[in-house]
Image (cartoon, rainbow, N blue to C red; front, side):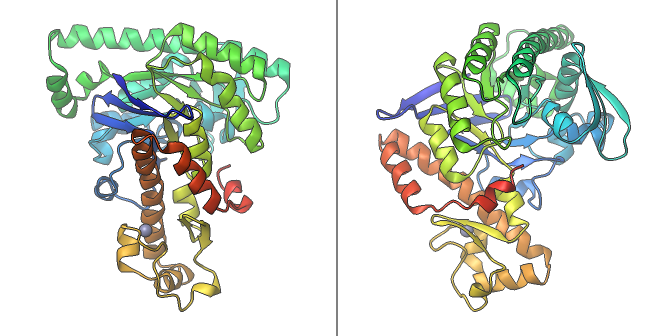
Length: 406
Ligand SMILES: [Zn+2]
């Protein structure tokens, strides 16, 4: 399922390949976020042209709108949004804890009212798995409690223990669902290629190959991160995510959280740092052994007129660009940079023309995806450390950009 192709000599950076029911993912990988079944302002065709390998779907948002029954009616999220590549769905937990109202957390699950019309709902580990098999994602995530920052040690400790019990229930629930599908299809001896073809035709067969990732919590406490990593790895998952990072903590704490977990993670499974990050943060995480990332930054910043460049972000609304004939980024191969000037894009953004935001989004996604491609090449050539240092020395991070991830 996951193949480790190369390792960097001077850091923990890894080059890998993950096989899913809807195709192969080369890691390190950036996963554009399709919050409501859509990567904002970008069509699936454009995502394919950008060479996005996988997109992320937010279970909570899809649950609230349009509702799981609508997606079930279409045979899953792939068909509903017309994206035939891999999809990762989160469990919905993060948004329940950050967006929904009146949460009541118990051992059984979480009661909440959705943020759109206040309808009460309940999600348990078993329901989280049922929803994600109905969505038909290639990678499902366990239901976890994402503790806020800051968080007291004893609360975080109890939360880690419950998250472990929930992870076990998720694994067992998914296993039962897979066995049911297996019994109903009963084609036991099929090849992976046949399964991949049939995954596109028949969402039920994709569920047999749905991967489940465990999530490590533990807030900013070294002992809890280690205990959580050990407990989640002991349960055995197809991949391991580090959750509860990028929730407003200082960057050093974020790096330390990952460093505490990493030694416990098996080398032959993919690792995913949830909700990260800025371009230099992703490279730092790759150097610490992380393979997968998702972040709203490239799409969300685009919508306030901010574009990524190798020297940092630029705000295209800035008057400096009024007569600028150069593209957002010199030598960038994306559609926006191949065809349009900063001046024109600035005009579109100022005039609130939708095209302006779309062009910046296309560029920003290209920037993130291309950065991962460069990282993969650098790892293969054993030049990753040099690449990371070179990038960091030119890139100037702005605090204002980071505030947007929250
Ligand atoms: Zn570009």
